[in-house]
Length: 305
Image 1: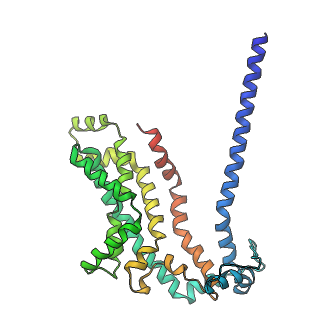
Image 2: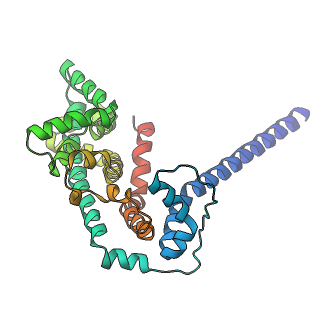
Image 3: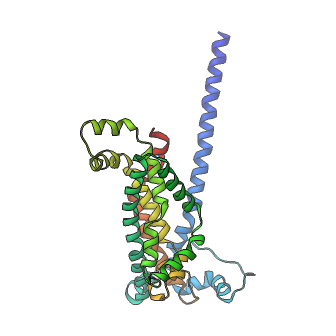
């Protein structure tokens, strides 16, 4: 009886410890989620304020930012609830300020081709790396990894020189072409395809399936979540690019909205908040639409053997 009671106490204690640990993790997760959401909530709420209210709350910040000063002896008033809700900022952005919409479509025209064609190139290259064997394939894949590990600032100068030699400097192709052949997606999809058991390929070949049929009917359904994860990561990476347009595009009219938003002056802070909200919509929609696929794509590395 004594041993049975001790076992019951240990089990109860273990259950209580697990519940306490789960409660602590839940509180930490909720606190972290709130902390990460605060900047987005602040941006959205400030986009509903008037320009006068924004200047009253944050005028000291933008004044110091434009004059180059770093020390502020005044308190910044962070407000999450506007005194008067106003949609004038959105009206001005959508109807009276065509520059912002032009920059938005510049971002779309730069990002979408990179996402589409980089994914297609990565699918073909990754399938080749996963299916082929040999020393040469391993060397090429190792080079891919080395290039991927390099910061973009390192490859920016070679990209500039090559674009200049090809006569592409100052055009969108100077950004799109290097983006299409980026090794990032190739690396991730190759790792996902290599986890597919070889017996799947052997069984398909015994049934007379060719490489194209194996790719479309076996590989793609298995790595679909990984592909969508790659699409989301590529989109977010190039949607927020700044260095490439500043270096490779001479005409400011071709700059994306990510560059234009960084040039905020004291008179357009209200519009900037509204544009920032619009700028956040495409990545948020992609994430919300493909949240399950993104989670499955990340988790597949631990589940697929």
